[in-house]
Image (cartoon, rainbow, N blue to C red; front, side, top):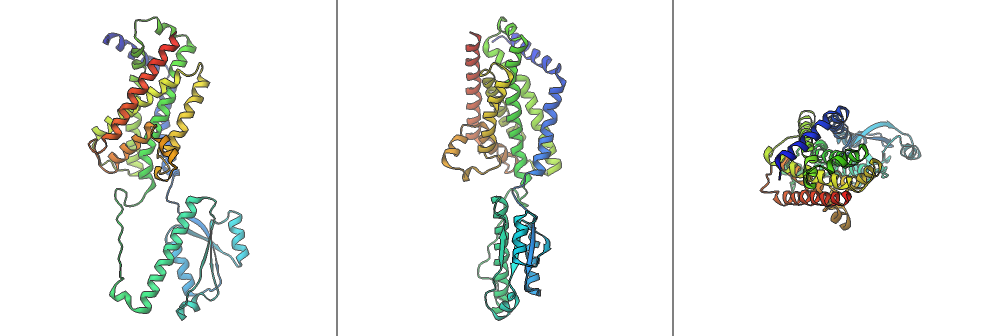
Length: 373
């Protein structure tokens, strides 16, 4: 290994990066923009569903039930309707996502000790929103049942037979941003670094500087290594920026050791840079390489666990997700940032990222040697 030759290659990449300040500013500004957009927009805890109410009872009991529903923050009362057909029409037209129908004898049945029937119509075209609404409505019904039974039997003074208390760990407020922001770091690093490096060799070929690199004494692996070293620093700047903004804006904690986080991130950055270089050898122009990169990026977002839990995926999708570096990095960064783990608990994921980094760099170098011929 010739340190002077490698230093010259790295210096050349930094000079080339400096000559394109627009791209450099874009690499630094896009992560913050994506963090703010995704951090505020992506919500797995669906709230504030517009709701209409058809209250035929118009009693204190029926109003109390509606207030219990709106108190969950899952439902927001838009207006009252005056018929069942009008309630359905509001849901059909998209004016409401849920409709609550209370019968005329609601209060009378409760006073008699009989079962009072309440119907909640939910727009289930969006499964995530509908599940939240259905769960909230059922919970309100259960709480109402417990309160009424306790009042009738006097059990309230003696206490309930079973008291189940759930303690959420790591994210007590159940904020989506706390889960999403660490994932955004992995997604941004993966997508941006793959695109940047995928275009690097193709751009060299199109501008005619690749031939100059070929005739130099630089070995193939030295050319590959020289191309990824500057972007390791870019990746660290992106990660640090997003981490700081996520902590200040979304109050995402950083509970684990920072050296472990930066060490795991180094493996992830190198793996994505190696994958980008490998992709850059698969096309002859920037359009071909960009399309190829998007073939890798879409499964990255959908199958890695960034937004959708991998446990809910079919077996084939879970197996495919195991060949994505982002799958392991998300487990690492969420374990370090949210749970306070170190590499001693997460060494299998770190080992997998190290394997990806070595494999992708080797594939890119081998593929680059074929293009030289």
